[in-house]
Length: 286
Picture 1 (tube, rainbow, N blue to C red):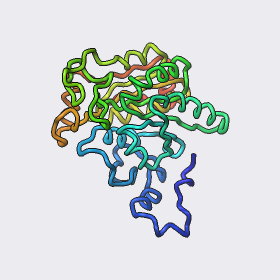
Picture 2: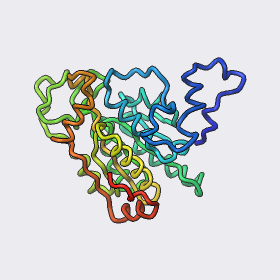
Picture 3: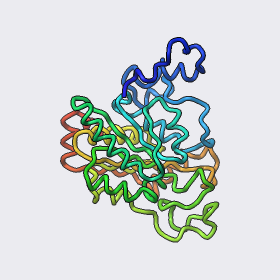
Picture 4: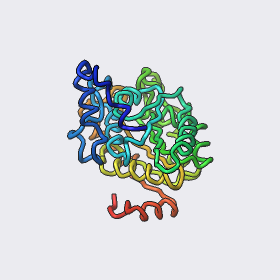
């Protein structure tokens, strides 16, 4: 897990696309980066195949720009919309079988802790609502029960976006989708509440309409996971293609959600708060 693995062989460097050269020469590693720095460095190769206005790709870019140590971070994902941007990012990335991402992340974190006992190696799960709340819910919950020192980020677009628009466990009750014409029959799964009772030391519910809050949540979650235990960030990333709104209304949609059903919430245990205070991360209120 080093910046060096992204350095191309010198003899072939000139044959590489300019996008890749920019990723190597001006990626997220050269100096500490934040959301404020987005646009001044290369964090993903282009063009990526996300739909116009994709909330998931925006959530990923904001999340990746907020990692405290990107060169020492590995992202664990699954097949799905999130795969496309993550596979083209400048980070170590592993795509697992659908749903078992927290199991893979748990094993990797334990292995890295043994291999690098004196250095922080962060493991961050970053997947959609289907991976966390549906197919991978049991693996997710048990990683929290066990107290694994990993961060789980749900990119919640409330639908299975890349397979035609089926309802997911995170779709709101009554929501009519391409492949749910009668509307969803049960309530949105309360994963945020589950995280608090299943052992997460820190949990945040936020939307892509609040990038500073999202960035602070990701950073805090990773820092707490290093020292204390599992953390969870649930990010509302609305899907214009399947939720049927104009691609230029993604932020407006997310702002509306913040006022109504996706109100910002931050939870932390005393131990997590003490950890943040110790490293000076509670100076600014978000």
